[in-house]
Structures are given as C-alpha cells and as structure tokens.
Length: 149
Length: 384
Image (cartoon, rainbow over all chains, first blue to last red; front, top):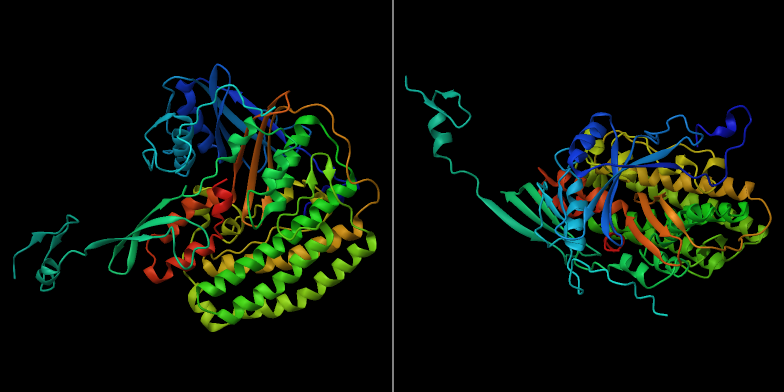
C-alpha cells in the first residue's frame, strides 16, 4: 500500500487484518429513509442479500464509504462496512425497492424475488421472475437442512 | 414563408429546412438479441439491443442461463467442504474465491493464519491475477481480430499457469487454500526461481503491452469507445479495472488483507474512462503484480503454513478481496454448527453489469462485442 502503516512511526501493519463491520437492524417502514440518507452521505452499496432463518428472513443491505464505519469511525480498525438489516415474515414478504437511490440494486432485488420469493415494489428493472433460470423450482424452499449424514 | 409551427421540442420552427425535417421519417427501432450464444462470448449473457439505425439506444441485460445455485449447498456441505466449492466458482480466478471464503470463516472462528501461509496466499493471488489479465488481453485481441496478439497473450499466460502447477499441483483450480492456512508450502529456492521467471516474463509482457497500447489498429478499436465518467462509475457501483479506468482510486487490496499491508503498491488509475483506459489499467496491473510477487517473496517468513482449526463458525462476516475483475464479497453467516446459515458471493461482474448497460447506450453496433469484453465479464462467477 502506498499509505502503508509500516511507514508511519515504524509500526508494522497488521498481517491479514479484519474489517470492523457494523449491523444496524431497522424496521421496513424506515428503510427508504435510511437508504436515502446513506446515499446522501456518499455511501456505496456493495452488497445485498437475503437470509432465511427459522421463523423469519432477513434482508441485509451492505454499504461502504471508503472503508469508514458509521457506528465506530474511531474504532481501532481503519476500515469497515455498515449493514442495514430488515426482517420480513416467511409468508408474503414485501419490500420497497431501493433502486430510486441505488439504481444497480435492481439486480439484487430481482434475485431476492426469484430465489426467496420476496415481492420488491418499484424496481428500476423488473425481470418478473426471469432473472435466473434454474432446474430447481424457485423460490427455494428451505425445510430442515439435509445434511446427508 | 411567414408561417411557423411547433416542433416536438416545443420551440417554434421557421425557415426552409423545417418542412424537410418534418417529412423525414422517424428512425425505426430494431431490437437485436445478442447472446447468450455469440462468437465473442465465452459464457452466456444475453442483451436485448434496441437500435436506431446502427446506434444502440438501449440495452437490456439478462443473465441466469447457467445459474448453479451452489449457495444452497450450505444446507448439505459443512464449512470445510465448502472450500472446495468456493474454489470452483470460477474457471479463471478460482484461487481468490477460495481465499476470500477461507478469510471469512477464519474471521468467524478467530483463527490466526500463520504468516507464511498469508504470504503464499498473496503470491498465488497475484499469479492468478497475471493469468487472468493475460487471458483477457488474449480474448480482447481475438474480439477485434488481432489473432497473433491473441496467440502471444495466451503463450505468456501458459507459462504463468505452468508455474502455478509447479507450486500447487493445479493450473487454474489450485485447491491449496483451507480454513486455517494453505495445504502446500513452497521451498524458498523454488520461490526464488518463480520470482526470477516471472520477472523474465515481464520483458515479454512489455512487448505485448507495446502493441496493445500503441498499435494504430488496436487504438482505433478502443480509443474513446464506451466512455464511463468518474461520476457514472461511482453512481453505478463499478469495481475493479472498470472503476479505476474512470479515475476512481479504489483497490480492495489497500485494505491490507492477506499480506498486502506488507507490500508497497498503489492502485493503478486512468482517467479517460474509455475502453483504452480499461485495457491500459489491466496492462499496468500486470507489472504491478510482478512487483508484488517479488516483494512478497522477499519478505516471506519461515514457519508453518496451517493451523489446526477447532469449533464451528458463529456470527457473520463480509470477506472481500480484489479479484482481477474487481472487488469480490463472500458473505458468510454461521450459527455455531458445522453448516453455515448463509453463504453468498457478490462477484465483480455482478457489480459491473449495470455499468455495461450504460456504456452500451449510444455506441455503434459494431462496438458491442468489444464493450462487452471491456468489463471482463465472468459469467461463471456470476452464475455461482
């Protein structure tokens, strides 16, 4: 790195360091407001994913602003990500699209729809369930994990 | 001609040219399906190209033809077995996928990887970048019909792949990463020999670069084609050379993961944002990788290359690395059992598809194959 910590005060940089990553759980009703704020503050959308849990499912939107963490900007780690997380019910999950603020989000949102059955309203580009073509019918249904043992 | 009439823009139109313009037929729009099977595409992606004459006015992407759904394998394979799966996400940049996955699981389990293993990971990552960029250069040359350049790119790449085979036993899918370290060590003298050979190859790469950067016919196909401004690159969430060619100095390696904190380098940046800039970034990164390999090999400490790992992953982590195509993210979430709760990979191509849509708007039909290739699309990664 050009700005390697090795050059600052003779302190060797950490080998294989880990990022500080914060997760902030928010209600669905405030999602657009929070995303709009992230956008206005210059955060970059780096990732969005859905995870099915036992009773519900969570959708995570992950942001980065040149490695700064919103929650702990003065944390020991120099870098980090900030994740906004909403929880959705298993049945008839529905979300507003964040593509008015982050246009490229349409790919993540179509994936959420196709693979997890989440209805995302207002996507910039809606593939109507045809983003992915899979042999296994989608949305995937997760029952008891088949661990094969 | 004292008459005036409104034109479609709302302005009053007067004068002798107006009637001709009014009589000119509106341009007809044609939709041309491009892909998923096309001579220039090694992997399936489809674009609906909306044309006015020869100009693309809109492009609608479609992926998902070979979606493998391997992320669902977390229900069947434990966190150690998934290393093999992550190694097979891509047939070009396999090693960095497995490294990113292992880094994620190691973060969940607080595993400290031995320093020698961390340096070996760095060296193999850069060799993987070299062979991937050389592959792209070859495919690019093939796309604009420069077959001898294609051949020379692949000839040099073959030597890199041979080195990887000598060190790991694998040519593309190396299979050397594991949670807690790496599976193989490389003797110091063998490592010194690799560095010497890679540096020698640098001379051959320089001759290759000379043609890519200065040949008239190459520049004619790349200069000013598919310009993506700095603002657009930021807006569209671009990553990797696609982003750096538009003037944004961001490279995930500067986070210092693996041993990147111990090597001296700076992101390779160009500012013109066109296809030539994207080509130039990748070419300059070839020499950067050679330098990083030499630095890492000179600093690699001795010792073990792996530690025993006990317990199961608990918690969540976004592990990110710089692939040849840009930032890749491996999201791992565990609940304290052998099986991960969630594993998702956001590949660089997934992040660059929206930018592809934008650079295609306004281009000539003949430039579409070149523009598709300038994002260095890796659909097999994206269809993980």
